[in-house]
Image (cartoon, rainbow, N blue to C red; front, side, top):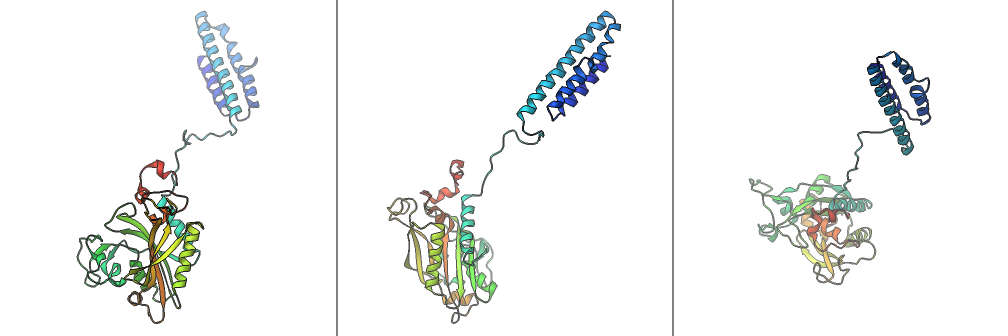
Length: 341
């Protein structure tokens, strides 16, 4: 009899747990606890037991009856509170926080999208580069200051017979010659975004930083096309309320050459410890030097082009809605800072 009672209990509890419709609970209550229910059928045989056994069976019967009644109440409340009848036991009790792309990666994607709208193709070239592509092909002769050990990271590797020493690429401009050689025939409309390395660090510089290099080569390309491209990017990336300027400068691989500045995004042109005079340098630009075109396999008598190279981190920190006083903060590990982006 004891086994029969336990079997009835197990069957009742199993069926109650599978109920999805509250109306089914009443049916089960009658089937197991009603006047003609299964428990009462078993109880009719208690009268034939010895007094001591009858007492034990009665106690067991009451415990089973109480367990079934409690499970009926619990299941009824559970169905009332849940809008769904399914339960996934693998779902975490506390949902984990979801991360997002790093702010520099976000900036790279935004920059890429802006230039894609005007026909630029995204490319990427080696971060460990030969001296020839980093300097020689860009019209930087032996003895140029950029080749100094205090400016460039040189690799401890054997010197190549034709390409010279190996360096950590100091600028994405090394991709200019590679892209011209790859395409062989203009038009060229390249945007090269990659890591660069220089031996300098302060509030506006990092030893490792990202740079995006633009290169356009075709027939009839002039300074007007360069200015139009830079203005287009400034309007779409920084917004219409920021001012830009171009001032004459000198670079070995462009002629004429310019520095591109924008009003500081931290003080909005008033002057602060970041910019001092209200302007912050974004990078260089200019018309591609004929020697560079020639080194890339392009005839400078038929084609002309322009190029520009800006730091991604510096460009990002100059956005109007940001107030980042130190470029080194872009690589902060402080989640309070990173979660803002």
